[in-house]
Amino acid sequence: MNDRVAILVVDDHALFRESLVRLLEGEPEFRVTGHCATIAEAVRLLDTEAVDVILLDYDLGQEAGTELLEHLSSRAQKPRILMVTAGMSSTVTRNAFHAGVAGVIFKHSAPGQLIAAIRSVAGGEVWLDNSTMQSLIAAAHESPEPQSVSPALTSRQRAVLRGILDGLSNKEIAGKLQSSETAIKAVVQDLFHKAGVRTRGQLVRIAFEKHSADWLNHES
Image (cartoon, rainbow, N blue to C red):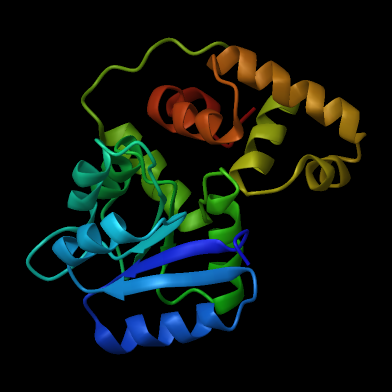
């Protein structure tokens, strides 16, 4: 079916890559368009196949997977990038998101979590697990670049933002906060306005890039 999510797998570890392909081929909503070990091979495959999501390893031996982003910048159609990695430093994680990566998931994650991450990224959202969020917060606090003054968030806005960062839908956030879905939608719109964005993915990126010191603290 043409409406299946087209996926390209880029990983230099052959056994992991082939196991990942077998897992994805067992999901009727996904279609693996190809898999390869290098950026050059990935670029050639992208020239011949339309791809929705790239599962990209960071450590490709002699090259960093994020170098592929430079090749994608000039393309009219840009696939969403989900990094599938054994580990990345806080600074590398931050830089990857700044460069346009839509999510990071670790290779030791459960298959169900990987499937959920692909669905989220393919749907235009940003995928962040707790480890990645902590890395981004740490990187933001270590950054020498001054952050802009952040508009204050209410305790309810902080709670809703945390739910968004946890990947919850408005309905799930409403259930967690014992509120109505309509009320949560209104809070999300307030967050969009304060961040100057229109989508959840943009909100997550701006929260980490510009407001992490104020918005992502656990204290109200």
